[in-house]
Image 1 (tube, rainbow, N blue to C red):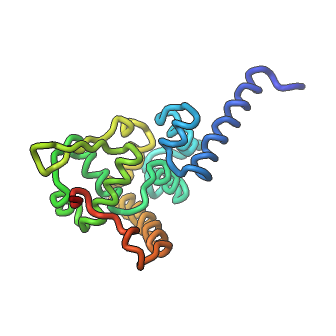
Image 2 (image 1 turned 30 degrees about the vertical axis):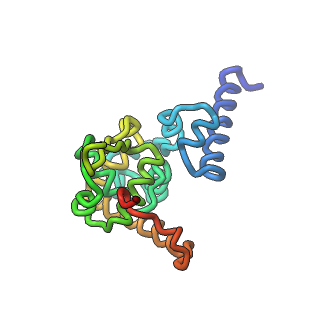
Image 3 (image 1 turned 90 degrees about the horizontal axis):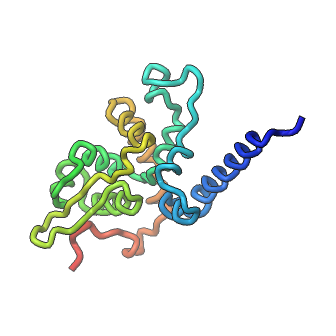
Length: 202
């Protein structure tokens, strides 16, 4: 028996989703660029990236990290473009303080990282539109706001896991591995590869 019209439409939609995910994973590695390319919303795209639910697989009691396996945690980190433990620490800070007027030096004290890494992580969060940054012309501090995309389920899920001791430890372990891989691939002899901390330019 041939496929019904409904089945064919579902198959067409599934193929379209896979093309978009493939474009993100193999071409842009950037959710915003892929969404602009295909003309889809970021929130819709994040629902496609979210791991599918499985029977008997929900809640913290279903697994060690909020019911998720390690590969699924990696998917959540990929969705936000997170590459360093500092990225996660800053997201957790802005989750608790979603509208902050603050300097990089103050963030470094709160998060416990150096200024250069704070600058790199802030740039990454802004690039992926997770945090909005604006300059106050009368103050050395900048205003940071948690972007509206954080109402999406994927990020809420990751931050909920990061709020637990075991979950935060595992996410930071995965991010340390990513940071080490990134550092080993960069040339230590090229000063242009080292990002300046935010707010230090002339």
